[in-house]
Image 1: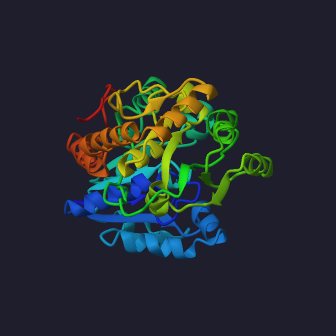
Image 2 (image 1 turned 90 degrees about the vertical axis):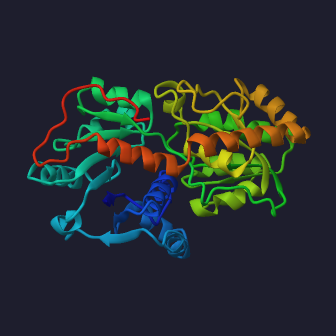
Image 3 (image 1 turned 120 degrees about the vertical axis):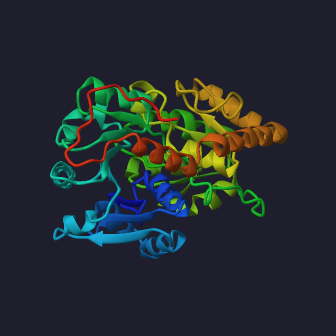
Length: 376
C-alpha cells in the first residue's frame, strides 16, 4: 500500500514529543513493504526552532536514520492532488493547519479512494476544545486517539463517527539499551517545561527530591523560563537544553534512573495516557519512578515501574533504586520485556493496517455513527 502522512514535523522534534512515535511507525510500515511518503511544512514552527537552536545537523541525521521513508517539504503551493495520487492510506496529524485538514477531507469526499484518518496526540480536547472545533473532519473515515478516554470524548461530543484507540509506543529499532555505556549521572529527565501544566509537579517530584538527596542529575528540554532555570541551577542540577529525540537513548544510558512526570491533564482529565517518555525509558532499560498517574488501561504490568504519591515518597523510591542494583535491574528488565511484547512501533503499524482493513475506501463512503473500539 501507499501510505501518505501529513505531519507538522518529521525531521524536527523540537517541542514535538510525537516525532519519535510518528517516525517509528513510518519506519515499520516501510519495513513491512509499504511505500511511505511524509509531508511536512518547510516553515513549520518545530523545524524553524530546531534550526535556531543549532539543530540543522540533527535534521540531517534524522533523515539518514529513516532511509526507507520519503520525506517531502512543502510550502503554500502544495499540489494536494499530486500528493494524494495513488494513496491507499492517508494520516493527518492534529498539529497541521485546519485548512489543510479540511482540504484533505474534501478530496476524500470528492471521490478519493484512500482511507483517511485524523490522529490526535494532545490534551486540547479537554484543555482547549475550541481549538479542536476548528477542524472540519467531514470526509474522514475515523480518528486515531492516543488513549481510550480521548476516543470516548470524540464520540461523545460528536466530533467523529468512528474513533480508535491508538497508543504511542517505542521505536525499538532506535530505543534500546546501550550496555557499553557506563552511567555518568544518577538521574536523567527528558521533557519540556511547557505552559505551567506541570510546574508544581516538576518541583515536587523532580527538582526537590534531587536536591534533597544530593543526586548528580541532568535535565534536557526546551521552553524553560528564566525562573525555572534558576530553580534548576539552585538545586545543583545540570541543564542540557534541547536533546534531539534520536539522541535520547544515549542520554538514558548515561544515567541510572529516570522519573515520569505527566502534565496535569494526563494525571487528572485524560487518565491512562502516559507520556512517550515511559515507552522510551522502558525500551532503553532504565528504571522509572512515576509521579501520580493512573494506568487505567493496564498498559504496563505490575513491577515495571514504581509509582509514588508525594515528594517524600519520590525521595524514598529514588534512594531505594539507586542503592539496590538488583531491584533496579529486575524492574528495568520487566519493563523492557513488556514494551517489546506489546508497545513497539511495529505493533502500532500492524494495528493501523488492521484498522484500515475495516474501513470502506470506496468513493463517497461515510462511516456509520457507531462506537468503534480498540483494534486488537
